[in-house]
Image (cartoon, rainbow, N blue to C red; front, side):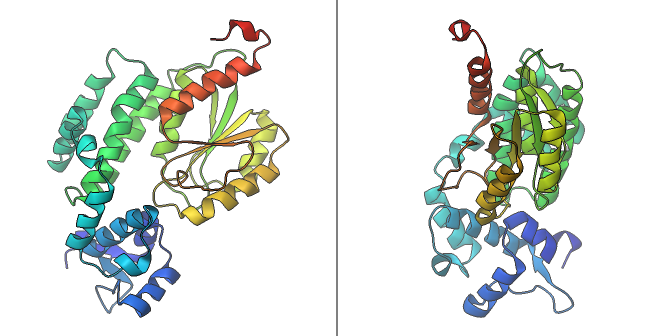
Length: 306
């Protein structure tokens, strides 16, 4: 087996959100997934693709007994019926060009494409209309086996560098809210959080980033110390959904009264029971609109607000 086809148990858990304990139970019950080698706990790239599709199908309402153990082709067929917007996502002209350059390992060409798309638009427009569709398209391309994990990591590294540089050019608007950004200790994915930070910073917020994988008490301490108004957190597709609400509840219990939490990302989208003072955003456009409403509501002269 080629090194690029070897997936460790740790990577598998990070990429799918399925714990080793759960996979062991599935192995005993359904005979899947099996280790690709007897020399260690490693899996094949095909099994990772199957498990990622299984994760998406479970989120869409399938039970494990219905799908665990099915072939990649069978899972792909089921997913095609559930993910009807895939064709629309992949039809986005910029995303298609970017993925083609990524597949060809034309990283300089990808950077040039991204820089050209930045011209003539605001930072928030750039993130919402260019970067966000691209990240969605990468997810679809991964599921379709067009690209591998290493492609995603290459593109993510470029996007993180570009957006980090953009943030250095933005200054907060006086009297706008202060927002603390972070992710839970089990959430290493930074890009979604960085995208939200760019949108809020472009609209005038004072943004304080703690980065990814921050202990919950440290986020709360930063809110206290910086007198922040809002905590913005991000949960990726790979973050276990069963852990999202308990984590948010714990953070909420550590915050001073009146502080609000804004959560986004694919991992937060499936919360069924809402928490008070916690707002879940399905996309960054809505998040930007809510920031404007927050500023408006805090204004002493409400009559001036649209």
